[in-house]
Image (tube, rainbow, N blue to C red):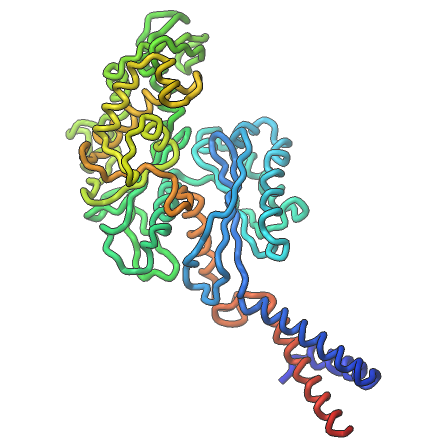
Length: 490
């Protein structure tokens, strides 16, 4: 039976049919045929879907653009989510806490980039998410929420942002969510999910930004704390993930904490302070939170002394102060790292091993090789170090500190065998960027699939074009019948 709307339209079109000649009827049939084919083709899902993530980090905001083949079964995870483009603008959005009116100008080039990449026909069905990491977790919560209120207004403006957005799609991630999403991303890219593979076949992840650091993996026994049950669409397994985020342990903050420690230990009042984690002769004029005034830090290039300073922040607590055991950094519980599990270390973890040339052909490193290379590097003169790394004068000392810091985290904090090459240092798997935004997109697809049956007119179908296609097909069938009858009468 035809729908009422289709029946009414068919009566009107029937009148038109009787008023046109044979050639006009052929044209009318062809028009209906093309319209029906386009509508049904759109409903059939032969195209592509897109997703957008605004990664609001501590140093800038980046739009990441993803694409995947349109699915006929929404209960399954797309097998081919591809990271196709990106654009980053600086500074970090936290810098706009006291000038909210500038947030629109900050986001506009990112939205323009997305509009240039995503086909206009897909704007209304392309979800956009804005998620902030440690840079926003560090500022006053009231200011952070004000930033996001302003961002939500911009993303809800269909002129500026024609994509699919709701207020809950813009928020500050917890550190543990960030760790979980990075873990999902890496394991999605190695195609681990949906195969009922043993947990030992999954990979662990470590990620470091400017302000925080995350580690995530499935331990050999159930975690006693920091456990997250991860469910993936189309996968019958649930994954008992351990993840923890260390705020103030990112690359920028650990350098600041070293300077804080040195300043608090020094008797100089606003004078020069020797910094063993900087190359000999390097100078830095800056402030520290614990004392008033500017300080000049001068590098002494002493890697062993640098490690002693770092150990104040990286050492596990003594057993009598660690519960549950074992502990990683301070009193933070962490299960033992599985000996045969591969880990991917990404983002700021990549910089020092790359600069110090300790990454093997398969992308792996050992803590021992990294530490030895860093100790040697710390003793170099600035010209030799710049020649070796190609770094600028402002960043040449960072590889001394970061190389030692990373190696100490691996061996002393997280418990990796220092001579075992089980950590791969790379931001990419098969040329696809690993980071948390990919995992967030996978997880967002999972949440979007959890709709009640009443949300869609038919099982596994939420395509608004489908009823329209059926309507045009119904009218087309009616006109084919009329055409057949007219032909017989002639």
